[in-house]
Image (cartoon, rainbow, N blue to C red):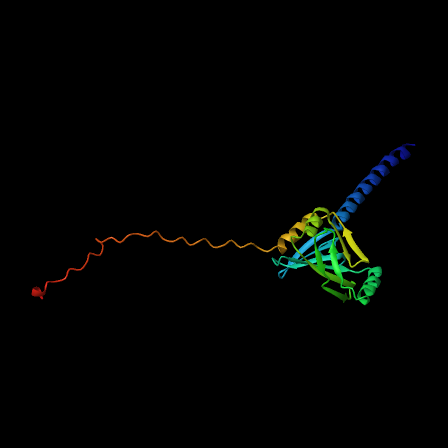
Length: 206
């Protein structure tokens, strides 16, 4: 009996310690692998994507990029399988593919369709960095848009909203301070005592 009564507490303590260590490790992995909006800047360009870490190539469908201080943001979106078929039908219909953003104010021409080895087909368009669409995106982490009459798209992630603010700050134009106005010097009347008038010699003295 004595062996049993002492063995159970020892095993329970060891088990609790193991579970606690596992919980800490799991929490650490969750923090390191947190899917959030992340921004980076390199060689005069800034980018914003959904990713679980800063060192991964596995990112979300929506990618935002800009030339630093350009005032404009390029939005690139990887197509789903359904969207590829819808884009094909849209292009063959002869309809001009305009992007209507969810703020109800901003419209953008579809800039390009392109194919990449990593993400397949994607579409892209450009919006001003201070558009209301990006204002709403920064507050909520959600984006919504429509292309033509048949394609609706969007995404939502409200983790890492500070990165959206940082990204837009990089993209905004820098307002240069105008040079100070040149003030005219006060006009000073001439002082006759500084340069007295020359006296002419009389003719007989010459």
